[in-house]
Image (cartoon, rainbow over all chains, first blue to last red; front, side, top):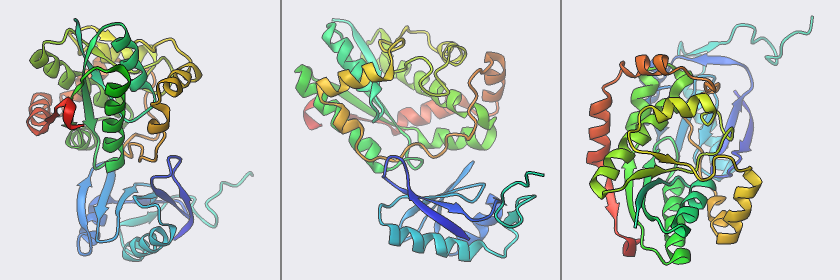
Length: 105
Length: 213
């Protein structure tokens, strides 16, 4: 689900960018994620914490992982993707076929 | 000696603003609005390091207030127009700073804002923010170029601290308003209990004596 992990500009965290464009329903996400994580806040950003690192989840699926360890970040992003993929909490964005890029036609 | 309450983040600008006013003979009381959980612990650490450094450089003791701001972000994000979030945030900072100024006998609020640097610092937005304050807002950097500010920061030794790793606020909207209208902002703010949020922020704040930094 996540194709790119890159350090934030301040290098204090790692950002995970989704491969496809999608929209998250935070209330449904909260229901799913609270089985495995502590939910700190559900506002415009969903903040979750588990035993590994704190994560900010954005509505477009972007993750900000509060760690400077890329291996931990990749693993954590993969776990979150695993929890959410295939659930009603994750809706494909309209026009999100393939790479998610717009046709030039 | 006049006293000002200075909003200190962990960034480059606010320590420079504080330094400039201390050099003009002003006593500073620092206020750090703690944005956790939407930032990380490193931001608070940086702000406190910067204040300690300013104390050392200027030989002036600085009392510091740390105020929880995360719950305010949650209230605004859940209830109000997302594009205006930075305006709500700043107006809340000013409300809290003014209450601390009352307690401290300070005569104004000092900030590191400079024109056009970020979305919330346009003429229209600063006008909307000013409306909330009864005390004067002192902005010594308002017309300065970022490079000029960085040069001063380097000279006084705060730059290296300000650029230490620290997570930027993650609740900033994707498209923040650059030309907010006061009536719209005030109308949106009615969707939350502002007075209760201010009181809660003041209840949760703590004070650090200069020698403890």
